[in-house]
Length: 454
Image (cartoon, rainbow, N blue to C red; front, side, top):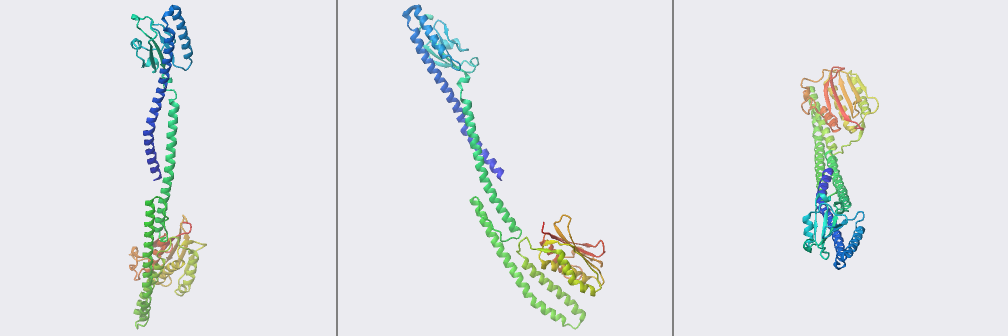
């Protein structure tokens, strides 16, 4: 966006400067030509006055005319210095005093002798310059019919005609470049301000999308962006209100379910048929875990994306020690491999629920004496902590691809335990993989959780 704004402003500025500076450059050239021709015309008129005064004394005879020519020659020698226009006088008898300009035609000379003063452009023969021709009517020297006049010629070369144009053009060009750079600098500051405000709005939107509902945008930049920031803040507040209300309704519903669930458990324990009581008791226990999961999910809703850190290895050792007595009573070997510390982004109570659910699944759905292995490691790229729960039991049923979907475990349970593990892992930025243990031949559940460094 910043580059596009600079290109737009640069193009617009270049067009405006071209419209303004090109006529200005042509005006400078025209002014230089006018100045040079005005100087040449004044020079020619001055020489014509001298020639008329020096050669117009016809009564003085030959000596007088010769003296007059010497005066004119001296004046011409003073005028024809280096770098000055070449000035000459063509007398009526054809005599030329001073250096004459090349390329002046006979027709132009005859026109000047007839009494007309004008500017003549000989063309390339004179280097592209011009010649100012002024007749000296008072200096008739007995030409054809005695009526021809002497002519003063002042030749202005192309270089002198356009003297000072190049420096003026360079000054105009420098002015244009300075204005262009000034415009680009101003556009860059304006674009930087707009882009900075836009990026801040995008960052706030990303934070809201990531679950940080307290993120708010600071109104910056143009009026439209400030309006957008205000609407984004209103959207964040609205989402926060809706999520808070939903969380409160979920928690309230879960707490209301606790009382009837407890009554249902008491009714199940009072059944006379032990097998039926045990079956209903397991269903009630699953329902209690489901209610607990609803409460945890309600508490977790709307939490910031950067969850508190929890040591997965330490918590695994702790929960293994908790379940060890029951495993020992059932003749199960419980192996734990959780060296060091593996901090992951998840709540300790959620990880405890995951471990309890996974260990409980092994104890509930495998024969007594089945071994259990808990392994904690870090992924090769260091971005996730890995929790693997394996056993040497019969493994998952044929419909294993549906295991972990709430209510569709295929093993006679609600599937809540694996669903809790999946939900917690995904909330942390990880996942759950189900399969067969390569080492022990039974079921394998591997959960990944995002680490502190990722």
